[in-house]
Amino acid sequence: MTYDPENIFAKILRGEIPCSKVYENDHALAFEDINPLAPVHILIIPKGAYVSSADFTNQATDPEIAGFMRACGEVATRKGLDATGYRMLSNHGVDAHQDVPHYHVHVIGGCDLGGMMKKATSANR
Image (cartoon, one colour):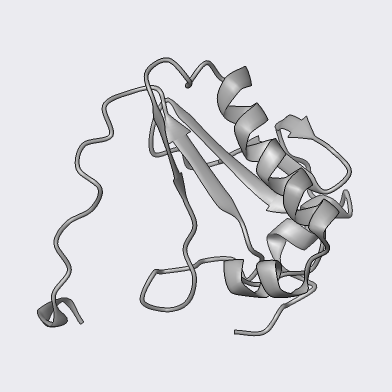
């Protein structure tokens, strides 16, 4: 998967598309998901052009990585998820159904999220 500078998250970062901002620092932007899967569903994106976690951790600077991870923790705290728990999820590639070719993490919580995921088998393909 290659980075597409016209993806929706790149447009949000450039201010071309509005978002409901929850948190921002020098290296990350967090905003409400427009199709939430739980009472709290926040997307956190790095401000750099990265496609996946591997791309991000291999190419980003240490300050970018630290700032991004701090944003994830800060969002969970600000949304009151520390007491009851939350899930951080990142999809990469076709099998994971990554919709936007810009690395991002979903912070999901505010209710019982159930088991981690349905059991995956080769029959699911």
